[in-house]
Every structure is written in structure tokens, then in C-alpha cells.
Image (cartoon, rainbow, N blue to C red; front, side, top):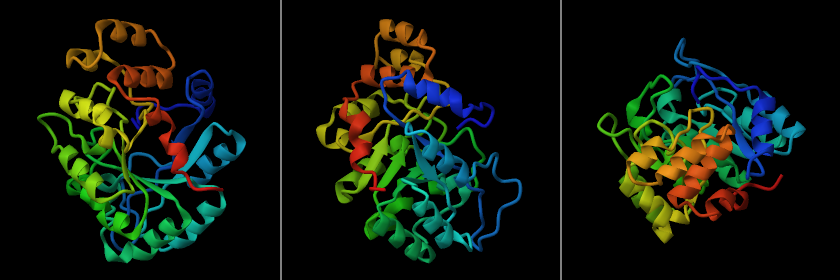
Length: 279
């Protein structure tokens, strides 16, 4: 999320209700913590409490709650249980921004409880240019290895893609990991933004390779601005698509239509429903 852009919940709700989608995952955001479980001062650019997204999801069926819990917190397991009881469906993190190395053996019990409950781990991978980065190496999808070995269903946000010529690109690492771990998925969030993530070869494989496409779920990354301009420049969509989608004021629907034009099938938009735990 871009900390300079804020959405009121009713704006997002109206976007969903007037789009071709039935629901959207809304994300909490925990503070960055050090390895001892202390908040890192002045390291996080914003904070969204778990209770905020849980309450919104209880009030509106269109909202699916993704809580955020740093596993080094002294109350991490207690907070996990509280959030599970409150209806959490996903746990969202940005390992490189929040200082979370999921391969740390200290987090084993936390991950085991996630696997037992069916809670999905949605973790940022690849480039990050909107939030402060504490540890760049944790953008590597391999940060999810231990979680996957324990049996947690993981979604690698952005599928490990990197901003061209600026950041490391972990797309091939992500692809290789999907072959080893049947519970690893990726998403296509931010791949219709003006951020130079959308390499033509990667998009065509994500959308067109049957084995890889079967592991991709839709993600918008709203409120990050969405445009088909780069997708058109890279030959991924037509000039007509760029013009027509630019006229769509609903950012969630604009993003969805760009993704469809890129070649992502309808299964991409429905796959998450089959992965969510029962509540």
C-alpha cells in the first residue's frame, strides 16, 4: 500500500460492490520488530490494527480479513489464537519491511499453529518501493521455505518479481519453488502498476503456462495506482485496452480488466476461495 494514499472503508466497499469481484482481502499491518520482539522505533510508515480489519469483515461480507502478527512478539501465539477466533482467513506480512525471517526456528510453533488452522500466509516478495525496507535479503521467496515445509499454504505476493534494472528479480526462484512445494502460490498484484515489474516474459508465463497459471491468484495492490500504459508499451495489451481501462474510475475493476486483457483466466479470480480455511 502507498502510505500517501488513504481509502475510507466505504470507498473500498463501493468499489467491490460495483466491480466484477465478489469480495476483497483487506490487510492489517503490524509494526516492524527486532529479533527480541521489540518494536523497531520509526521503522514502520503506518500501522493497521487487527481489530480494525476483523470488525470490518464482520460487518461486510465483501471484506475478507488478513491480520498481521510479527512472530517475534511476546504475545504472538496469543494474538494468533485471538485472531483465529475472530475469523481471520489470512496473515499478511512484508518480511523485508517488518524484519521477519520465517526460516528462523524460533517461529516453528507459530507456523505449526498456522498450518493446523489453515490460515494462509500472504508474504511480500520481490521489489518494495513504497515502504521502508529493513532487510532487503528477506524479499527472496526462499524466506517461506520453512513455512512450506511445515505445511502452511503460502502466497508469494508479486510472485517474486523485481523492478527492472533496480532491484533483484526472484521470479525464477518463485517458479522453481512452485515445483517443489504444492502449497505455494503467487499473486499478480502490482503487475498492472507503473512500477516496471511487468516483464513481458514473466507475465506471459504467469498467465499462459498451465502449471504456473494454476498457482496464481488475483491481487490488485489497491490503492497503488493502476494503469495499462506500461502493459501496452511492453506489448501485453492493446492500445484500445489501455484507453478503455483508463476510463474506468473503479480502481479494483480497472485492475481486473487489465489482468484479463493480459491473459489471466477467470480461475485466477476464484482460486483463493478454495484455499481459505472454514470459519
